[in-house]
Image 1 (tube, rainbow, N blue to C red):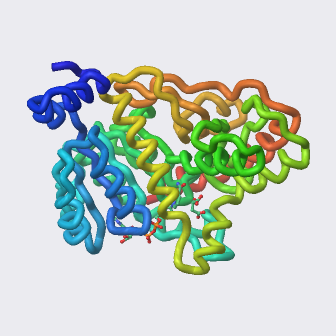
Image 2: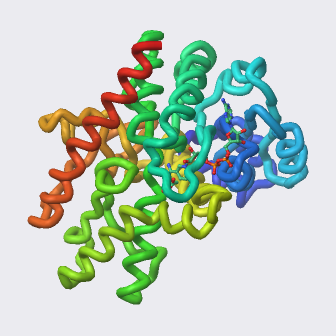
Length: 340
Ligand code: NAD
Ligand code: LMR
């Protein structure tokens, strides 16, 4: 039996008997908010993922139905639904990875920060449950405003004495997914192979696309238009959905991509790099403790945080605009967690 992800895939493909080994090596993943607009398609994608052996679906409503439905799919993972606050501890106990898309989404005219009052309490209560029932889990936070919800969970884990900065991640993958698509729209490149580094946070001016590092030539007008579109891509979807929510399907894909990258790294695969908002030294000199850059993932979670690399003059300006907003968002999250 091998611990390497590649090796056990080989077992599955080549040896029917190896299917049993897949169960031993796969991970337990819990989705919190699993019945929601993101939660359902994300759970579907995770049910299809061979790196998952056990899928635990938690929400305040409707999870028995979602779990029963997904459980009929003939992949080698077991699905279980948990409904209501009393079952949260059981849902996450023993989880290797906990993905959190719980909370309210935006309506037109709202900023992500407008969600703070509702979602801060939701993620804080989930953080407390993680501290008690799954202190070693890797925690992936999708709930907005990410710039603040991530520090809230981190402070909650800290208060319980179980915070490990290698295991807390804000999911910013959707920003790079969008950046790849928007660049390929105007440059005619293969969207699936177009890589754009996006750093900073996950809201408006805190989203900093580093187009100068793509190796693609842009005019200044293209750079400014693309930057704005990447920073405000979420608003395009909120507007188009016209009061019924924000991005769910593209977010599910982005969340499933990040979760899979982490699962592969946890299984021992080397060289896996994803952008993510983590406790980071990159912007610490400017008073910003949480920051997204490309991060190499490993068996313990965060393995190596990549630096910013060289920035153009325009990108230096974007960074300077992002810093005060990030400082404010992080402080707000930390203060909320520490007053309760
Ligand atoms: P939704 O309303 O469709 O689903 C949210 C789900 O969370 C619901 O099923 C609800 O019952 C559940 N929920 C509420 N309180 C809960 C609690 N205490 N415990 C467990 N579950 C709870 O919303 P959605 O469209 O799925 O969006 C969810 C969140 O994700 C929003 O905050 C949204 O802004 C955010 N989001 C983030 C990104 C990102 O890039 N990080 C992208 C899109 C959306
Ligand atoms: C997004 O980027 O689509 C999400 O953060 C949801 C939103 O509110 O825009």
